[in-house]
Image (cartoon, rainbow, N blue to C red):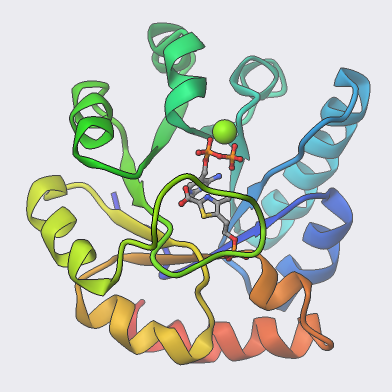
Length: 201
Ligand SMILES: Cc1ncc(COP(=O)(O)OP(=O)(O)O)c(N)n1
Ligand SMILES: Cc1nc(C(=O)O)sc1CCOP(=O)(O)O
Ligand SMILES: [Mg+2]
């Protein structure tokens, strides 16, 4: 499976409606602390926009709702994975991406036979508090060897100036939140990401 090199992560269907039509081909809906009814309607809206624009939607955390809403890809962290029914995800035909932050997590992730592995945080992130120090670029190369032939996603503190290093160290996709959502011009920054990642597509 091939992943687009630009992996956008946002926390609402409104962001997806705003940015996916610009040409985003891979987006994660990462919503926290909302009632289930909101989650369902957000996922439905996001699905509609992504289907209309040929964009792969990945639902973070809420694998059961993703199955029920007819989605085809979920992302889980290690705590999520520990509580998830991976067999049910597979039986429903969904693909699965998994987070990793250290060797033990990589072993756990590979044992679950995911469709991609994410490594982070590559650089410090302001999105959430993390108990891991930044991995640095060299860790991407190490993960590349271990994860092959699966796609490898780099995440954490990425911006358009850091893409060269991330792809030179053989990540397949670069995931981003705040460099776009906290930018003064999110649309302009999204276009910049699309243009700058085109050579790795
Ligand atoms: C592509 C990608 N990589 C890592 C994460 C983080 O997942 P997780 O560790 O479960 O943390 P939350 O995002 O759920 O806070 C991700 N969402 N996407
Ligand atoms: C959601 C998330 N997960 C990470 C991990 O390392 O697993 S880093 C991260 C935050 C990514 O946001 P930004 O691009 O703003 O740094
Ligand atoms: Mg999670």
